[in-house]
Amino acid sequence: MTAFQQILKDYAPYLSAEQVGLLKEHWRLVEEGAKIMNLTAIRDEEAAAVKHYLDSLLVLPYLQGTSCLDIGSGAGFPGMPLALLRPEIKFVLLDSTGKKCRFVSDCAHALNLTNVTVYQGRAEEAARQKQLRAAFDTVTARAVASLPTLLEYALPFLKTGGLFIAMKGPALQAELAQSKDALFELKAQIEQVLPKELPGGERRLLALIRKTGQTPQKYPRSVGKPEKMPL
Image 1 (cartoon, rainbow, N blue to C red):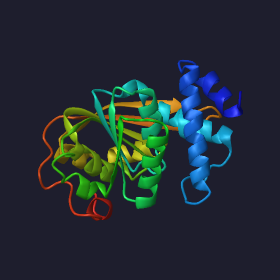
Image 2 (cartoon, rainbow, N blue to C red; image 1 turned 90 degrees about the horizontal axis):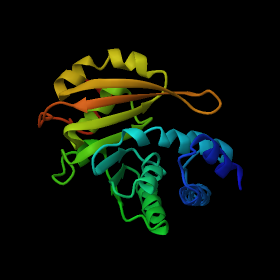
Image 3 (cartoon, helix red, strand yellow; image 1 turned 120 degrees about the horizontal axis):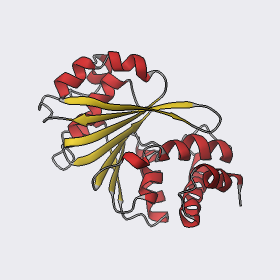
């Protein structure tokens, strides 16, 4: 058993041997891809097991419904590990970089993941697409932007009653105070903030944000505005 597999076995004992093997195979594909493009700065498999895979799996108990959008998926985190473990949920992985989207699409094909669709585009534009707007039960995002900006990216994709899971570090506490206007304007509320800790002591915070009403049609604003001029 490799160090990668041992860490997952020790800290995620609910995973079957088959699931651990699938996650290991995904990491092998990421390692290969990282040789020719900027997918991840992490090269050590033990660090990857913790900072990519166990980190992604923090979201697993909170997924709801049958559809999930992962914003800014990059090399496929958290979307690909979640899709491997929850084959009954349809995942759309969104990223603006064509090379990364092609890589993730190739990974899904190599792993026979029929529940993964990859979509290239900016969140501000993708949320205007009829097939994506208000289409998802759950939306995830890991280390994409500050929370006020992230809310404008994510909430238009959710069905009313859907759940946005923002995967953040300790900076979330300050960002929550800055998000009151965005939450009110975009029709959402903070349901829970859950403290988590990865092996080694690195802290994470998961913000579970419930969409309470229909997002006004003027949101999201044009590309760049949510970041430059947060609500």
